[in-house]
Image 1 (cartoon, helix red, strand yellow):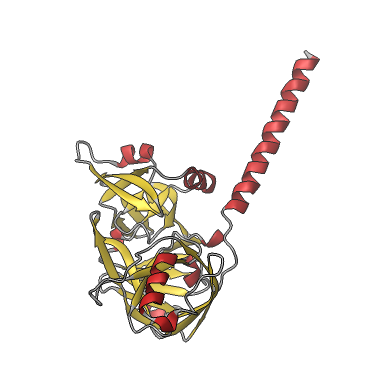
Image 2 (cartoon, one colour):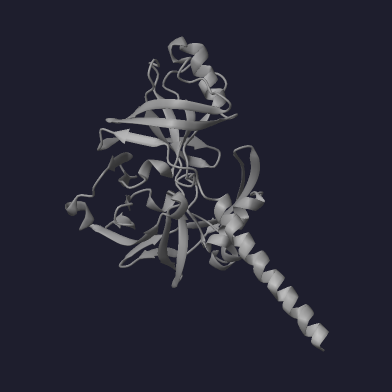
Length: 320
């Protein structure tokens, strides 16, 4: 009996140590590197653009940028699901070929571009170091008005700042403070910015949920687990399937109608649809589990509304 008790205690101790080790490993794994962006000249206000694909007209939210030595307007996909901004090496190579004046500035060294600068509206942005991944178009489109995407603008752009996204008028406004006149017209809920992930707390189906605000999931309202998807789906509603590419990883999406809504205090925002995904990487699934998130909230529920990300006040808001 004593031997059995000792074995049981040893197993419990091992499980406890393994659990703690796994917790700290996951924290370290998902902790982003130091913010490399230095921004001057705020506030910056400008129009953003939508990129369409087979998933719909709002597949990606694009912000226009200008680069030194490049006469063409380029675009970064605004993705708050990415804690760190990054560049596409294939796209940079195409720019260097077409515009030799950019060659020195846009040439990666060991997969990193150093002292990368660009103009964002009225603001100037300098990144000390940005990773350049083998991604993007290797040729410039013949049509100069066509969107040419050179990278991703991540959540590091809003660090310590205020972002107002007016979806109805496609306006992007980044500043250092929130006007009182706008704050009074906004319904706020708590916002957690730990590890540069924008996690808001709101009510869904009468339950308090932690939701990652991910502007990179533009075509969807709420991405969640298959189990939650089944609970939220309208009975007998048709299911729309689609395939996509997430940085080289093929995924399959399943979207259906839902009566569920996002409740921000006194403001109700209908979700319209709910989606689950197959084909995500194991590490992304583990992130969901370790963070306790109920899902990822995309742009679609706010397509005719204005969203406020107040990082100074640690709050997420929707203008009434």
